[in-house]
Image 1 (cartoon, helix red, strand yellow):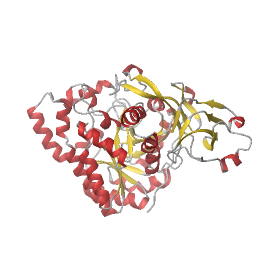
Image 2 (spheres, helix red, strand yellow; image 1 turned 30 degrees about the vertical axis):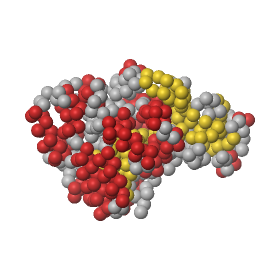
Image 3 (cartoon, one colour; image 1 turned 90 degrees about the vertical axis):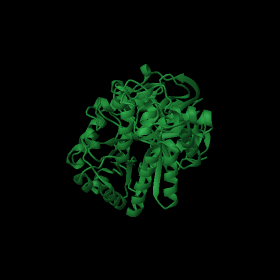
Length: 477
């Protein structure tokens, strides 16, 4: 049993909050009935069950519940209505962070899309807007698309503690115009990797080969102009082999630049195989998948509602991805949460907007589909959703139930059965790809830095605006 040391000596008269009675998933992989002493927003003591009760400023009895470290969702898009580039109002952060805490998410890292220099006010603006509404802590991955932004990378690391940067490998031939982004090429990617390598940061590439995708898309659109093939057609227009090709390409350039890459939203067996092969060649590569690729296939009856880039795949890909989580080949699970309204899904597979919300259902998916159905240990889920993304993203105070870490905790009723309903989701998107799904395992309470952001299944409105921008720690070579 891990016990308090410095934490107790700094709080001789007691703790702000003591959590007792719960089964706690600890950072050593064990689950134990312990007391957690929380002081100044951090975990100050971990001790035998019942032993800290007398020193509680406030006592919370969590008997019957399981405590996991708060989820770190390192892949979301915090936007504004149809616009996914950035939040424009504090209400954007308020609604989506409320969705987050209902799913045990206590920190998110959002992609930030701009064609302007980030240090000319963009970062300050989005941090201020998000801080005014968020219930959770947060950071950003700026998308790098211009020479001015490329020149800012080291200063973003030093001044803001931003240690990850996104690059859309498909921004070629005008493909990025819908997001207001210029074209880039592999030479630009190499120069970004060189800069992040020197700065102790990472690149998060969207891995697809758009030039080949165009050829396949045009052929399919000519044969099926109304998109009657649905998700199968969308998958065929952006096949998994082209995802794998792009993973090989970016990892090869990362080896050339002596830099690290975090491959986001891996969808397929081919993608996992490419990542594993590149690791054997010496690539410093971490791998993320998303909940939708673990649960949905081209056969989903929801059709365009499940349209996403890269696409959902086939049943064999789903099972390969689950195995990769158990075997340690895939490091993290995230959401690629997008909160465009459901009206954006109109017009069939060719016209529907890609993406959907997911923060509220990420942990329930992993508990229900992973733990209960496939026997995935809770300790593995804690690594995939919390410890690993915190480590990869430089969130040094997040990710585990450890003395000195932030008291970010998700309280789960592992036996509770419930049905997801569009009408009961909390994202302002107003829908979920899990509508009608029966889950086993429900988030009951969520703590963010020792304060309840969700209690008894209801978001705590007084926590709105108390989420903080988190400086991250570079991993210098």
